[in-house]
Image 1 (cartoon, one colour):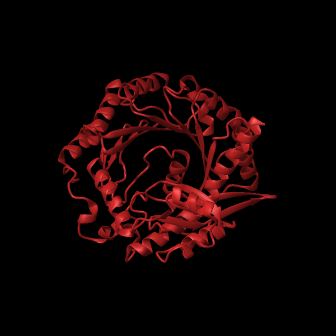
Image 2 (image 1 turned 45 degrees about the horizontal axis):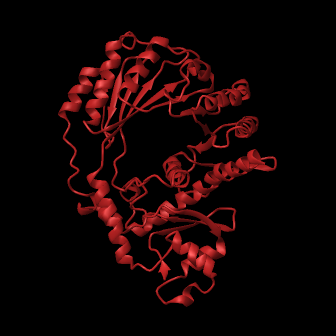
Length: 419
C-alpha cells in the first residue's frame, strides 16, 4: 500500500487541516493535518508505513484513491489514456460577448438592425466550427435595456441552444427582470467594485433573491481593490442576507493587485474576515469548485486545452473584435472579421501536446496534467514540471480560504434550514 502519485496535499492557510485532491479520481477531502502527514509518509515499504493511521482511516483513504496498490507507472498510464481521449475529443470553445451600451451611450445604428445581430451569430458559428461550443456573455451596466434587441438576442441564441450568461451591474438588475427565467439565463453574475454606491448595495439582496426565486442562480463577483470598510461590510451583509434563503449563493472576492502565488489574502472586518484571491486565480478556484460541487461530472481540463476563442461585439459602436485562442486579435466590421476567419489556418489537433517539442512535453509527468487547464509551465517560464507543480500548489493554497468561505457556510445554512 502506498500513496498515489496523483494525490495533491495542500495545507489550508490558518488551519490545522489539509486539502487532499486526487487529480484522476476527482476526490476532494479535508482531513486533519496529522492524517495528511501520515499519508505523505506512506510508501512501498509495507504496512508499517501507515502505522499511524487507523484501519478505518486506511480503508477510507484507499476508497477515495489516496492510498493504492498500483505502481506509479500504472497510474501514469491511466493518465496518458485519459489525456489521449481528451485530445481526440477536444472541441473548439468560443465566447460570444455582447457589450450593451452604458448609461451615457446609445445603441449604434448597426446594432438596431436585426441583420447585424444575425451576422454576429453567424460569425460566432463560423469561428467555433461545426462541432464547436458557443457561450453567449452579456455585459450590462445601464439601467435600461433595449427590449427589441434583447428579445431578438434571446430568440437567436436559444434557437441554437447557446447558454446565455449575463454579467450585470447592480443598477441593471431591474432592467433584466422582464426576461428573468431559467429558460433564458442559466446563471447570472453581479459585478461590484469600489464605484458601487451604498444605495445599490442596500437593495441588492432582495434583487438577487428575486433571481433565485425564478430559478436563476446568482454569483457575486466583487473587486475588492479600493473598497472602503463600509462597502466591504455591505458586501458581507449582502452575502448573509441572501444565504438565509439560498445557501448556494457564491461570492468571489478578487484583487488585481496581488499575484496568484502570493499568500492567501484576508480582509478583517471587526471580528469577521473576508478572504480574497488574485483575479488570475479565478480559474483555479473554478476548478476546485467544479470537483467539489459536481463530483458526478467529468471535470477534466488538461494542460493542453486551449483557452476559448473570443468574439466581442460592442453594441454602442457596432465594432467587432475577434481573438483566437493564441491571443491574436482582429478588429473591424463583420466583413473584416469574416475575412480574417477565412484566412486563418485550420487548427492542428492531430498531435497530442506532450508529443511535441518544447517545455509542454514535461507536463505529462505532472500530477496536475489533467486539471490545470493551462500551460502554466510555458507561460511561467519554469525549468521543469516539479517547479511548475509547486507554483500551482501555491495558487491552490491561496484559493482555499475563499473556497471554504463559500462551502462551509453552505453546509451550516442547510443545517439551520432543516432544523
